[in-house]
Length: 164
Image (cartoon, rainbow, N blue to C red; front, side, top):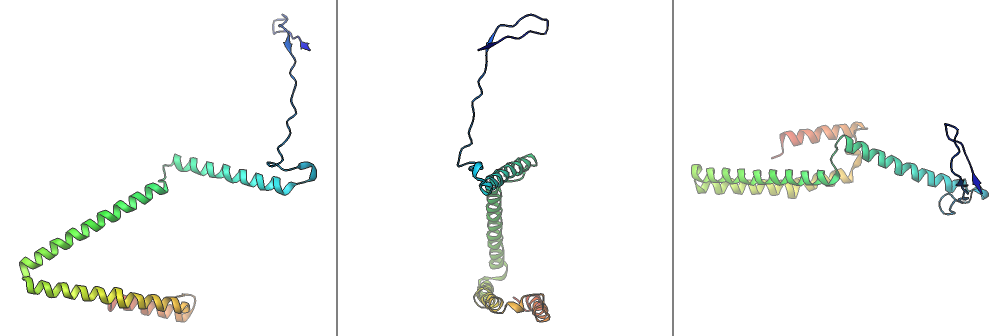
């Protein structure tokens, strides 16, 4: 079967074969069987499509405003903590060297011993005790009750005035 047509200036165009349109049936797993009224499956699939589209739009917006990816944030955090640790240990070495030279070895030994005792007291006694109290008595750390607000104030005072 052929069809002929006229061009804009009135000349006849060469015949072209007629196109036969194929009937495309929906795949049963994607939209579901609409003849049976499976609208829930269609809704689930359209929700999934909307979620994928929304995720792509958010990713595009993040790329446009140049937000950092989780991998970049992870590396930046690791590098920052490494720099802080190196600076801490370097400055500690400077302090200890200065103390030995200026104060003498006996005084520095006493100072280092006091530091170690204070660190052991904080990390082996006080911190675990505070965690146990906070875990076993949740009403004492909730600021919704009078008791909780009072305990928070007492904890703040303790941390400000009595902690080493």
